[in-house]
Amino acid sequence: MTLYTSDNTKNPQKSRSRFAYRWTLLYLGISLFVFIFSRVYYIYSHNVHSPYMTFAFAVTLILGVLPCFAAAQLRGCFHVGYYAARIYHSGVAAVTISVILRGVFEIAGTSSVYQTYLTAAGIIMLAAGAVMCICGAARVYLKAS
Image (cartoon, rainbow, N blue to C red; front, side, top):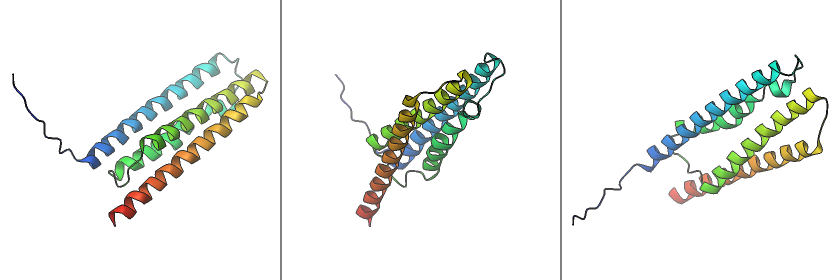
């Protein structure tokens, strides 16, 4: 029987930036999917269009790709907590789905109050995740100095 120990001296900043790059690529893939979905939906909507459906992909680009890419470029200068990241990503998902639903409802010529609730919940989750991230970064900065 052979026992060994592994060297766990990985650079945590490099690991965090790699994780942020993965999220950036994931959000780029989601943006591409939403873009293709909106084009296919336009084909089957009898040439009726909605600006919400047309620009739904921009939500994940602006709220997903840009913050994750910025975090990757900062190379782990701040530590995003587990819960802060999950709440923020859930907010991005909620707002993206809400925008798509708004576009579908406009094309169908109807509306729903639940879509407004979903938007509000998504914005609250985005704000909560961002505040938790900023507070975590401030705590790490104050602890280091």
